[in-house]
Image (cartoon, rainbow, N blue to C red; front, side, top):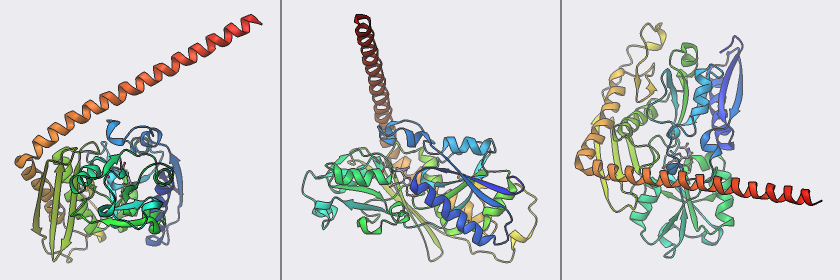
Length: 386
Ligand code: DPM
């Protein structure tokens, strides 16, 4: 952060920019006397550039975050706004989630093609084609609606909606939060409740990533930290971390804070949706202790992190620790009840898929080079004739 400017990093997509601007607007609201200008710079990430493979077949974590994280580490930017679900459970050394912003509805939503606009998934005829590249969505849909056919679809939200109406998909499944942030409430024909499709860890929440030792930025972000969202997302990320899942395994979750209790429910599926381990845990939250307004005191100790999320100034350490331990415990329970076998099998299938995808791309590259070489040979022969 220079003396006069805060520099924010963002992906270039319309959704990423909307999310970044939401955070900037809120920051200005929380700090009306902020005397710095806030400036945004945009970058493309690996995930934005590889558009011909399903995310799960690219075989890399940090697909949408690495380039932006490098800019953070090199101090070219002061913070980066992400969809929390795109942030791996282990962050690069020296970086942290400085705040999680109040979560929107984390559920998935169905967008129907024009011809099916009055239907729901349950009414679609056998063999209807559902577009998604998420193994999590596809496994749960296959399980609930074995009569439907899942087909990969890639690209940002704009691309996917145009593919829906121009290709042979009958419906596509996307996060409700993303669609609503784009202002596309009208296209949502059905919201998938967790009994049909549990969501992705962190879905619907925005996370602001910054350097863990950048006190000035952490203080700036602190009023945006939403405690309920943070508690739920800490439990979810601790659960995913223990399962060692990423976007290449079908892992899903649901959390709730109600009557002073935190509930986490999880699911691990096989790729075809036929095998699954589902379980849940609930724990009473300790009563909040408001007698100690920590934010007023100067900070002497290093801030703790829970599943990569920084502690909040307005909530007790015990709460965050409890959430982290609850997530980890659920994962341990599920692993010992068969989730470990499903995960091991799924990971080896996906490793093979990734190898095949890489070989396919290599072959395509070779073919392209050969055909280019032939064309140039042909043209040099032509030119020697004239
Ligand atoms: C991750 C997944 C997807 C995104 C995997 C999953 C969906 C991929 C696909 C980790 N990131 O959900 O099981 O459908 O092929 C993504 C979206 C949002 C953030 C779009 C979406 C917006 C919602 C949010 C892509 N990342 O899921 O429809 O902020 O939670």
